[in-house]
Amino acid sequence: AGAFVLSSLYHVFGVKQLKDIARFSLVFSFALLPVAMMPLMLHLQQPLRNYEILTTPHFTSAIAGFGIVFSAYAMIVVSELWFIYRKHFVETALLLGKKTHKGPVGFFRYLLFSVLTMGAYDVSEEALHKDEKAVKILAGIGIPVACFLHGYAGFIFGSVKANALWMTPLMPVIFICSAIVSGIALCMLTYILTMEIRKFLV
Image: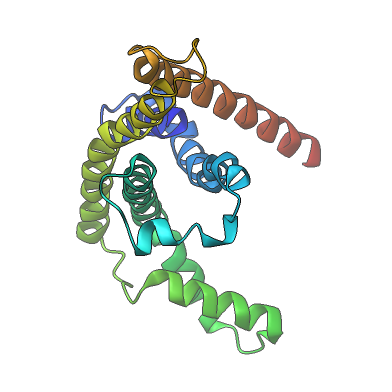
């Protein structure tokens, strides 16, 4: 959520200072999606049956609700990523398509990028402007969804009677604030380390 909010500060609110880290933070948010589910998965006695939360949802279940909200958030992040990198997918697919001798790795890359374009090869100024508009709308929707996701997790933990320190109505607010702060901090630290490694490799 913190990484997503960091990305949205540029895409929605136009904070120019965050332009360089905006794309990175969105990819970072996407990379952390599977990690967010790992503690719940490891806690289950039957982790291989986790898909049943989404295929047969019980709408009075707090965990089923969390699964639905998490899936909606994941779809927003994936859609936003596709719109941001669509131009790159198209350019790479066209470049690989022009090569006569691709080899197995080159053919696989061509096939992968061709699939990622989803048949949308238009990279005109008008099409790219529409992509930017879609990113802005998705980022705007994503901010409250991300906050609701972590607030909902806080609500689940806040309703646990077994742990007296958790059982407080402030838990959703604590979760949202800690998610945003820790996410931004981890994203910035990873970005700094990545840039330093790139400098070293160059």
